[in-house]
Length: 166
Image: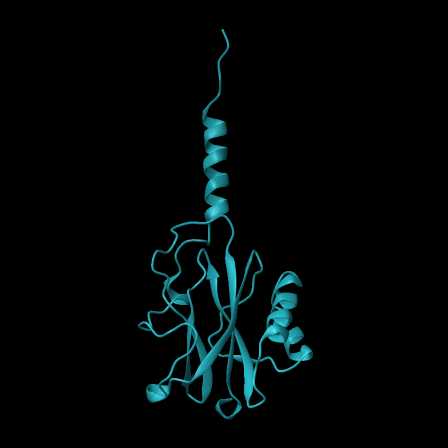
């Protein structure tokens, strides 16, 4: 008579599934409902809003990084390199540099960047505001967030603002 052990494989499967999905659930602290401004730009300067042009949302699975609302000036290759040290691979830095080079940024504007999300979803856009003297980039709320994912996705927002706002 052959007896099969099923508890061991079932327990192993449950543990692996839990380990793979840990940390990828909905993280409301990185997503903020800011109403419905256009993802391309805001027109109002009321309540600390800053006019901006969205250069790109760079997303990469498993890139790591730290969500930070305060924007970083990315005006040259050295600034991009310093900002990109937080990522696990050079792919994010290369994509950021590529998007900045490809963008048609006027001379009177400065490119800013911030990690706006690390989780299952890529936000549809961002808002830009001045808070306590700093420029802050906040992700827009995802309409139908995923409840779990295998690998967290890092999203970096790149925006161009008037140089006077920095």
